[in-house]
Length: 291
Image (cartoon, rainbow, N blue to C red; front, top):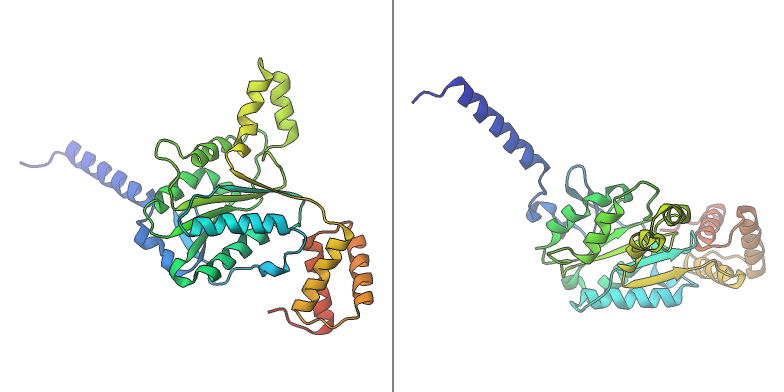
């Protein structure tokens, strides 16, 4: 029976729709290549994981002044890697105090402790791709590996509704959060939302308490809260001493401290990031590498 022009048009249209659906669907797990590396970056536009051969991170012993947070996150992560119950974690607080550095350092330390046979994967998702998180979780649900999905500097501005998707993902929805996946995030805000956004909801709502509760409850989805606060001068100098010793920077301690304090004064801040920047500058002046 010959195909009419209308039928041919319909078949052509259905073929194009099928091709388009195939292009936007998540790639099979086998194509994601989780065995290619221990760390990846998620690209939502292509639905692909990009392997990171060498992660930019600081060794765990060099993270000074955050010992309680360090030990807590390390214990939580190691339990998860061993197949035991663990919590999603929110690392919040002062800028430059090692929140994202801690996540990457803990990931490396846990892999070192457990050996290659228990490789824990770290996948970074960018803030602007948070709405694609359910798609990434679907991709990872059947993976044999255990995975930490990490979002650095997570926050939401007024009018941004993508936080609702994150709430559903953290709760797991009808399927539940995959047993092989945890979500770690860093933020400068404890509740992930700006204060004026919550105040605006409170002032315009019929029931102010209920209006704000939905937004504040987002951070409640994280079972583990770790606060990071500005460091004292002694903690800052301890960071400087640790870095200098680790990288073999042979400088008189009094001179080292004097210059480090002067550096922090010009920056208007004492923090782990400032200490690291000073050490980089000092190493360059001394002709030392930091590999």
